[in-house]
Image (cartoon, rainbow, N blue to C red; front, side, top):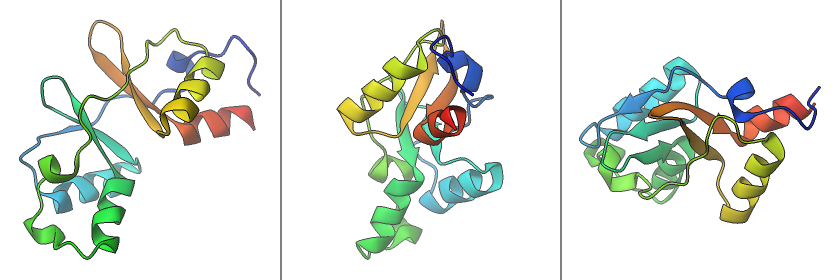
Length: 123
């Protein structure tokens, strides 16, 4: 059960899984499936993010995913959080920005926190 002292570091997913912006979408989807995660940090500068929702949206729009690269669907300029941010503030950020994943940054990118991580912690 969560308390007001639970921090991002307590529930984030590590190690952080990354993918190249030049990778094919099918590769990104396979990594997310195989690792049972729903987002990957894209190795751009500054880093971007690709999520399972991005892939599902492309399929639903009838895009030919065999021709798509991660760079075609990734979200640039992503919000990040520090590992010592309380869960309540993290959840508020996700709600305010309408997002479900936040890369966790200390001196470097060290993990990912998702809305499902927070939901699991609260129940």
